[in-house]
Structures are given as structure tokens and as C-alpha cells.
Amino acid sequence: PKIVVVGGGVSGLMTTKALAGKGYDVTLVSSTRYFEWGIAGAYSLTHPDELEKAVAGEITVPDGVKLVVGTAVSLRNQEVALKDGQVLPFDALVVATGLDLPLFRPKVGQSWADRRKQVSEIGNAVRKAFTVVIGGGGTVAVEFAGDVREVNPSAKIILVCSGDRACPYLDEKYSAKR
Image 1: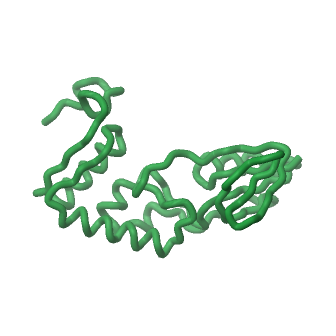
Image 2: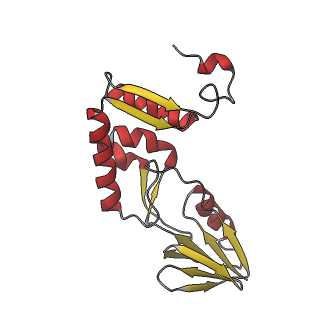
Image 3: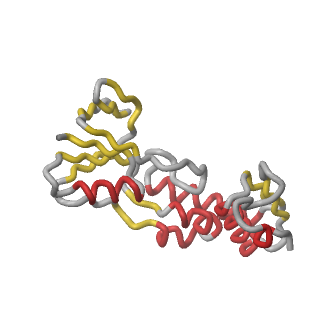
């Protein structure tokens, strides 16, 4: 059976690892050639010189797994069509595209050179900003606010949350304003 895994993040990579060597014809589709730890995104944006620490390098797949660098654009008749025109037939499809956190994760298909440039530009802007507005009040947003405070102590930081406090899923004592 042919299995196509769309998404070169943690879930996609772990899925291909689990399927490798079990008699399946496995193809991993990743939009980039490199693997960047999304959890390190907030820190990387405020410390762009350390971006390489958040990147595990070029994606490597287990023996027997084919890596295709591309962007899936449609799904029809048990085929995944890629932006470049490639069509990948499958018997089983795993969609492991994760989540989209603009700026904190590379854009779909973004080259390593473009990602490094983007992170550097954002880092420089954060260091010079008088005010930084962060949309969201989850753990990544709170972590980013702390990282901004570290590199730009005089900036006014505003968290825009949908509820009455940041991290509403945590006990109130952890989200109290200090």
C-alpha cells in the first residue's frame, strides 16, 4: 500500500518513522527542506542570532521513505496534487500539517535563507519598538512577551486576548498581573 504523509513537522516525521520498514511505500511531503522546532519560535524571533539552535537541519527520513519537498494544494480521487504539478497517488493519507503561527514558524515553502532574513528583521524591529502588540494570550504569546521584555526592557507590551486573562486554562494564580 502507498501511504502519503503531508507535513514535515514532528507528527509527520514520527509517523514516517513508525511506518518505515513495515512493507509500506511511504512518501513524506514537506513544504521546506529543513526542520524548525516551532516551540522555539518565540525565542528565535527575539534572539535571531540563535535561530540555528531551533533548526535541526535538513529533514532526513528513514530508509525506504521518499521525501518530496513541495506544497499540497488539492486532494482528489486518492491523489494529492502539489503546487509544482506533481501528483502523488495513495491508498492511505496522513495529514500532519500542524498549526499555523505566523512569524513563529516558517512560511509554507520558505527557503532557509529567506527564513533567516525574516527572523533577523523581526528581531531587529522588536529591539527598536516602543510598543509590541501580541495577538493571543496562550503560552506561546506569553513566552514571546517575556522574550520581548528581555531584549527590549523599555517597550510597552500589549497582549490582546479573547478572554479576561492570558492562559485561561491555567490556575488563576499563574496568570495574575504582576
